[in-house]
Length: 421
Image 1: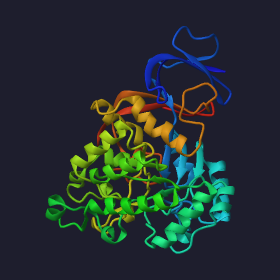
Image 2 (image 1 turned 45 degrees about the vertical axis):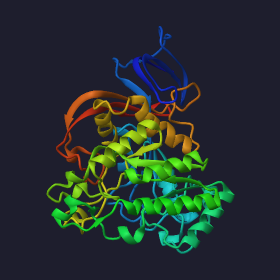
Image 3 (image 1 turned 120 degrees about the vertical axis):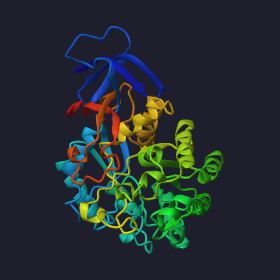
Image 4 (image 1 turned 90 degrees about the horizontal axis):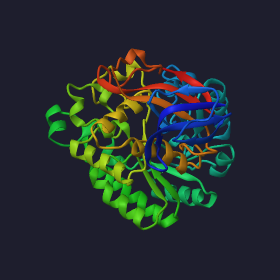
């Protein structure tokens, strides 16, 4: 038994932020309160924030195929250091996670190597090639929590319609990347004055809206459970809102980079800022923050994408997309808290509660009977980000050298401490 005393309890379900105590028995939360704590072995939190561990939907771990970029062991350490207690991993590996055998391999590797919980998504089509759907029923039975081809948009509408119909019949969740693949092919920036001045190949924000509209039509046709991995433009929000009002089983996410950075951060062709979709305008960024606050966008994720030095030390349009973010997700989110744009309960609703609910997991809560997956953090602790201190194998963070606030002091998974800061 462990009692966390003098803690600032962040409850994303009740949307409260109050000083209290929390008692943990074994792997579960036993009770909590705001008065005098019960007797027993205790941890004095010193008024720091105690919140449900982050459930990070959309983490890339580069096993199998590119273990030099990120392994389950290194990703697990990075997650624990960032307050992430559950990683939901993407299938965009080499080879893709598209068969029960590959899924079993990553499950075994994650169970033996990672210090945090790991759940796995399966590819939607074989090889993520958009031609033939995977055995969705078999993959669900083998433990896949969702199905996605990640940023490889299924261009053949008939193939996608069949896959969504089959997913609906098995109760599977499909995760899609809203993008019109023809327009976005080869793009490195968002179209506009800045991209034109920099001479960068660009894509209109309308490509996201067009991809969203197509997928929403197929969702209406098949009634499938669907999650959009990243909504990044204001033009996509009205269609998303209508879909929710019409009762479709639709949720949406956004990456922490699109909430805290904009297209101007690319500056002098800094490839660590090259992500997919490309960074948007400041107006789009603010619209995404407002959408998270209102609940229109449900999930904030790191979209952790490790890339080695060789793939980033290239001209901007040729460099690989993506950034590591398991360790920077929480301090980057604190930028929104300190700016007065989102409260801590709102942030943890999007980073812990909603992704857990969408995947049917019991975590993401501070209630009796919930798993004791917890993060203790100081939201005000200042530091300068040094990418070489990151626990990820790859160091491609856009926040290198940035002044940040928010440090994780401890992470617990099923009541066991896995990180001490």
